Image 1: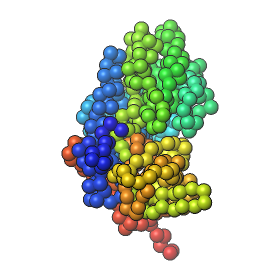
Image 2: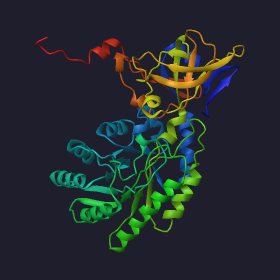
Image 3: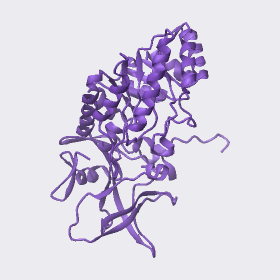
Image 4: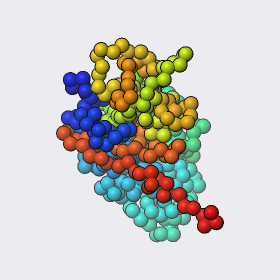
Length: 418
């Protein structure tokens, strides 16, 4: 959490006091550091510079337009998985030719929109998807550049729900099928196969799975070239982990070294799709204490944020550290469960977190919440989506306002017979 630091016992985001934002905006809210995002991008960009690779930010990590624009201004393209994300990328200043469309379930309408937008590349994940793209391309008489996604059947040693490169996962094609699809695509009039893509999962904290997966992809490239086909591009996805607790993830230079060792002699244009690495530690979720509840077995700190605001702890059993926005040096600390108001036992934001005695209105910061936080939020229990704030040195801006209850309820349409 590079730019979230205490000053005189008070938590700041860059040069902005968190308590000041809370007073003006109300809690709960997400707060992001623009400087952290920029520095993370520069770290990754410098690491892959010798490879002459291009960065396509994975919007699924955090698709707020201000976040996208911050990265677009640095030169990033976009990795998207829906028409909505294409539209967000374009609205934030990333043009079609800098967009890669991934995902296993692209509809015909989404494909039409992507072709009309002139995106750089479709990552193809199945034979049927290739056939659909071929049909739509011929219907519109528009050329489509593709990369065939390889599922290398590698165990990424991350959470089961974010593992994407094992043979039992829904993503990509087997090594043999990938070669077959590439040959098949080469015979299609308006389909332009450029290369292959691979992505084996998110939050990887060791390089071994990358090395294994990349080696299998390199073998495919050599085999396809040996059969006389041109392979000019590889999309190596993302997945590089960050530190939430005690993890020691590899740094981007170590990762880039693996890429260089594996593909250095193949003369390929390389694309990378970092998401969490760029934005994960750039954000915190700020919440207010409602009250404490002591039972015979546990101490619960009940706050105004909930699982609908940050679902990662419930969905992935993910750890997020929690710290007070204002230090209380005179209070003894003890472990507590941080829970929200949602009517679910699973509404747990953090477990066994050591915190001082807290009172109603005290502020807490849930750390490392910049990725897969706000973007996965919902209005469960008819709770309002919470604001997002972007800090840039001494300034901050509300980059997504809190809607009103009237706006939320007005989304429903009552049938005339009622």
